[in-house]
Image (cartoon, rainbow, N blue to C red):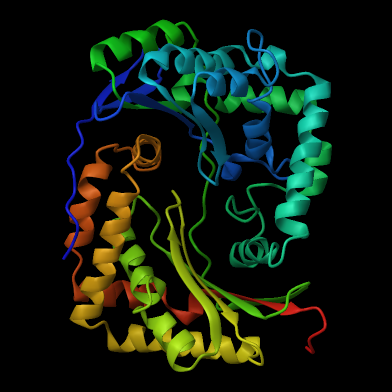
Length: 426
């Protein structure tokens, strides 16, 4: 039986400087989550200057005209709160969860770095955080098992110059080339109030909270916003393939299909399709590859909620003695059966129940809910999507899944990457 859902009260406002404010009051705990999302990510970077959005995620924690270096963390944590930031293709976000009576602290810190960050960035801070990001790239990408696989998938799936082609963390040579002038220019073009959405979730009175937002953010002037990048549609040039060697024990196979992006009507159906394929022990790929044939140690599938072009991934890790080619063939056999034969009513209902359960569970905490609301507001233009999504998944039928499966799982629009142990034969 599908889990129940909640209809969240959502209030919206927009300041004169363009800042969008979304409030979701909830007095169930004496906390407030602040989530500031800028509509800028790695897709907004130009050639030769990749990694800037992620570099800014680090730099914006390095102080401003009014907040000393590292004080952002200390002030929030001393108040009993938590904080962080993340970067993706389409957005960069900064967020805190604080005791409800410390709402002003969070608003001051976020407004201060929006309005008074630029003068606080020095060459020394840039050099320091550049080294931190380069070390993160070494640890999380270059020296991590399978760490370069997704970067390789993107590089082959999209043509040269495509905004989604490079990894969020950027390339080493581009990070080395970043100048202080580049940093100031990127900030001016993307980090103004009219390119941001502030979400508040928690124990507050909306009119009072909006007055506090106006007090802290209202005097920050709007800035010219850089034009949105032109994002070409998925290429129609046939299957693309690559093989990379890595210090790994077992081969792993990555298959990426082009799918509906987050704002598209069929996004939920594509997401339900990946749940049917690899979410839970009863899913098709896990049943076939892990339990019946026992040729895969692990199988995952996911649909990324990206803004302009969609990506659907199937990732399978081989068991000892199984080649990447054998594993890929087995994965494609299962995908072909679903594409050509459709889904059973029972397995589809189970997959959609799991998808809706994850949807509801992902909005239980104030911070996660604020993130979901911000993501919907910025990438879909509709924060109320968090109230509609449950019903959208519930309305998916077998004909919808079968139609989307035929389109998404088209082998002519597939990118395949094999990651092989360094010592393995070609």
